[in-house]
Length: 334
Image (cartoon, rainbow, N blue to C red; front, top):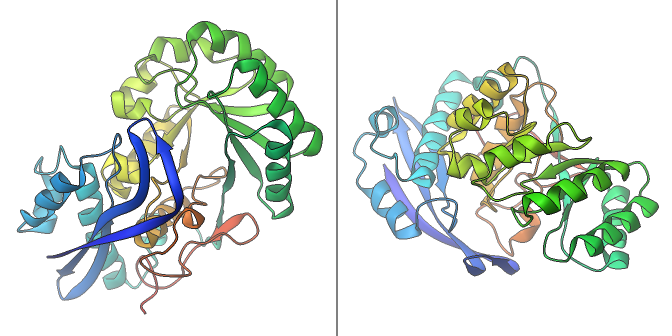
């Protein structure tokens, strides 16, 4: 197995609770399984996965890729496991002569996956203009970042968007910023504005609080909560209407697909997003989403956040959706 580090600069710095991120540091993972080559990507993200140095060390310690995936060798290195998993599955799909999404079990041919646009924290007019641009580009759903401003200011922003875009599916993402009291007050107001989904309204620890918010006219989605608790714990607590699955953080597209299937078996929906990954991991997430029947718009429109990429023209948005590669494996050969 070969491991090669890379660094991808962002088009602009990303502010997070852990500080500003100016580039994405990761590793290409190349394997040969029964004579067939496969490529994966491990791109750790602070606060979501192991640190880059731990990821690289875990990858370089692996002797048998398939064996590593079967045990607990990578239990504390989800990004490393993602990279190995994707490489092994890529090789297996190529050997089977199938695109990755079909190898993962997709029941039918899929040309594309719908995606949502994400609009950052700006004043009302700016937010409405960005949302309108997204609608004009064909995005079926728009997600607004909220929680940085006071609730009343966020309501003003959402009202401005709804006036400008009366028919688009609106989602908001609070990234755990609200208290339980604030969320109980604001969720009915979101419902009145036709907001379809509120993502991570409370902190990751608050399973009972998320459960209390359900049934108030807006679907409650848990994202960061899947790091704090297992998916089964979130489901057992009845804390979510939707699980937001990030393959890199969950330890691979195989595990992410298990989460989707488990959630749907319990009557809970799921969608797939990335952690601002490079082209290979992003394409893998698209194949994962394509393998799920009737999946709602996913958070896969992240290629534009990178100033440069591992491969150009991979998993990019066209008219509000991302095309699914129909070649063997994950991405077309060069």
